[in-house]
Length: 151
Image (cartoon, rainbow, N blue to C red; front, side):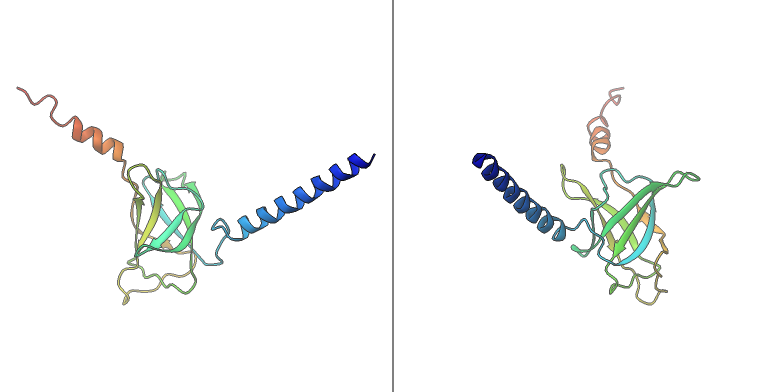
């Protein structure tokens, strides 16, 4: 009977410690919303972009990707992003999906544009966008570009 009590107490201690680690991990991760302003951007393709991914300006993380869905009317990929509320984006802001490297994932880069333009409000759409570049397709085109030219 005494062994069961010791084993139960040890199990409870392990569960409490595990819960503490999980709390610490989730409270210090970038998966939660940063309480920022929400903007929308439409892209022709968002390959490699994922919810929770980074949004950067000049290489500095300023927000996260909150949601992705397909616009069923025109078949564009709509990306919902949350940006630090202290950052003001103008109408000429340019959004581009960029790769972290040849084998890395993708993230969203914002170029804030001209300060003299009208400032976007929360919920507005960033209209100047460039979708993801398919490196494998580009490599295939480059490698196959010499085929058929021997005539």
